[in-house]
Figure 1 (cartoon, rainbow, N blue to C red):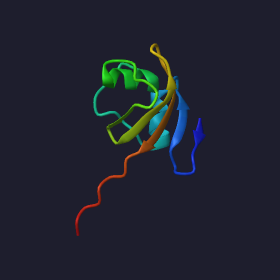
Figure 2: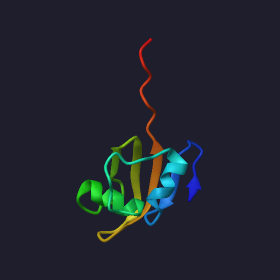
Figure 3: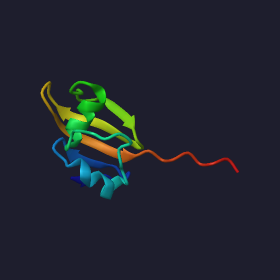
Length: 87
């Protein structure tokens, strides 16, 4: 795992989903069967995502950096800023 200058994290596809709460205060809104970030992205999309694809869900942005048709190998994750309430 590497933290980037912009505050995002680059993790392997096998990174444990449970650890995302510590990094990004991430808690999936729906119960997921997957235990890895690569598995979670595949579960969300219904297929294995390709490098360059991204998804935003449950307050995080995930971009696939590397992988193949069988698995996700590297992902960049960042928290999506919550919209500011109008004053």
